[in-house]
Length: 175
Image (cartoon, rainbow, N blue to C red; front, side, top):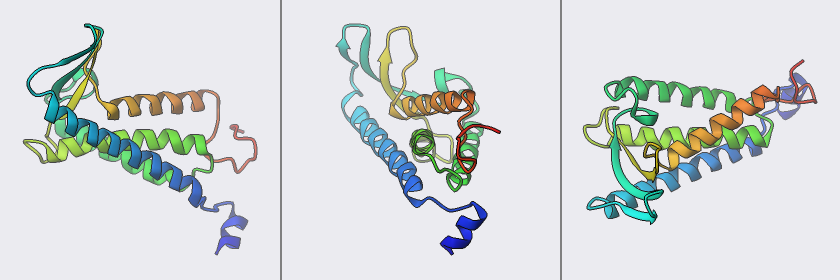
């Protein structure tokens, strides 16, 4: 089987996909644990870390980033599912670690926030996402949000510099 895949140029790189899965699982787990801790410890009052610049404050967000589209929770959930499915599809084509790490960040963040939408009240893809990191003059966010932003910015950079997801052409650049 391996010889045939190599001959066609479609060898599945299991190690790269394992890295994507490990990054996604790590982000999901860290996000889940941090949200659980935030719900347990921040319910009564925010905690100032660096004066008013950085504080830990529990917020339930029914919208997207920056609290946009608060009445469109099901659409946001559907979009997250579609993006996650696209990442799963492209995971079979990845042969570069940098792509695996960046897509793992995005996937882990999507799954972290999607878990909130599915399992938090009222449920059924309409739950509120737990946000708990507050920086002055910036909307409250969480670990999943941070992972998504870092991953998307990294993917945008790779696309801008024409670094392909698959290096079958040996250069990593678009032909």
